[in-house]
Length: 190
Image (cartoon, rainbow, N blue to C red; front, side, top):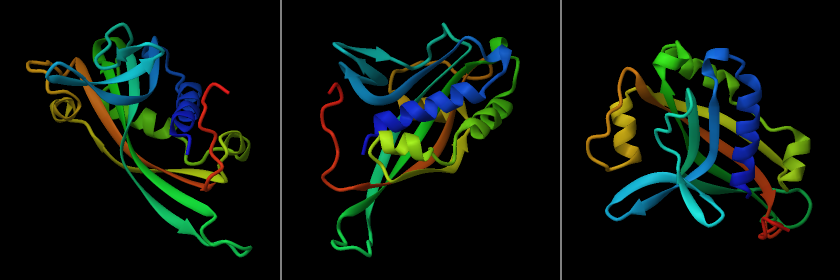
């Protein structure tokens, strides 16, 4: 499954659906991974030959990234032939939002509501076909508004200050996709 492509489409829809002037400038970093710098770890995105730390970027009023927490599989029964032809994949994702309340002029609770409303519940058939998927559903799970709790899961760097002005929000959701086994293009640049 092309999780990076799915996250790109989700970010495109979030950017399209967030039309609040005070939330500008904003930045969607996409699908991030944990990386290590000596003994400290961060969330970052790989841009060609280097890693960009996407945490706590204060150049933007709001910035966000997604991290894959865990995943699982199910077999989708098919009435025509091989029962193991289709796979259902379920990935639990965490959307991490960094906001500067002084710039956004909205509470973190309101910002959470704006993002929850902007996250799509399904991707269109056209988008799914372009990603070689039969379907893609997005189900919300939970959220976390305690910035200190979120930052402690995102980095072990000591003395990172988050709170009332510079805050983190986590929104957990599931991406449920169905695709044909063995039909995934491995080369992303082809």
